[in-house]
Image (cartoon, rainbow, N blue to C red):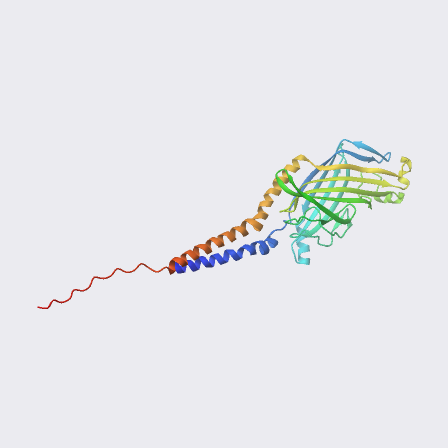
Length: 332
């Protein structure tokens, strides 16, 4: 009976020991993915900021700008693309909406980002765009891969439609969460005129006809939780200029600041993001650490118990008591 129990325990020990690496290296890459229906909203503030006054074509200081960034999963489009490419795909319809201190729109840029649900690598498909212009991204955007590494990544900049390294700058503590700090500088680059401008009568085509160009530079900073690859905080030091052309003739300058400021995530959204990332981190650790190591420990314990039972089964039994000698017959 002990031998049978030992064999059963041995079989379970082998099963759980084999399940440990399968959970980490087979199940995790397939189960960990971004849900296609995810919705996320982030609010950043710029205090103070510089904006162009289109009436005088002069820059002016304002107390605050509010930037609302939304990411909305488009399930219908992701299912269509998945059928064509044969893998899990996420489609994010993003919008960056900038509001001035008077509550009026300053600018807005829509974007469609299509990427692999597991690796976060871009997937090129019809509909990929920035500000209604078709693009072909290279590198990550918005989110890092699961189990982010301490290295530089290629990061896509939507405003300039360029890709450049975003550099790993070290490990830090952000409100009790260990994060990797990344930074990217986009040098002065000529960019497209935004399709949506805040002044009636001024259109992208009318700006282009004047010969005036838009130029842009930014320093982008992210604090990324490495297990989930999700940023818990971000900042951007952003500057745009209008240069040359007849549009600036009345300003007396050959270039003028169109927008400048240091954007930071609003405090209430920081707390919300940190709590959300902590909960997601637990789910990822379940697949990468807790279950694999737990199965390995359980397999070792079952193996030890099976060996103990086997050893006891092989130990010789106690000697049987000697029987009393039969009485000999007595001769008469």
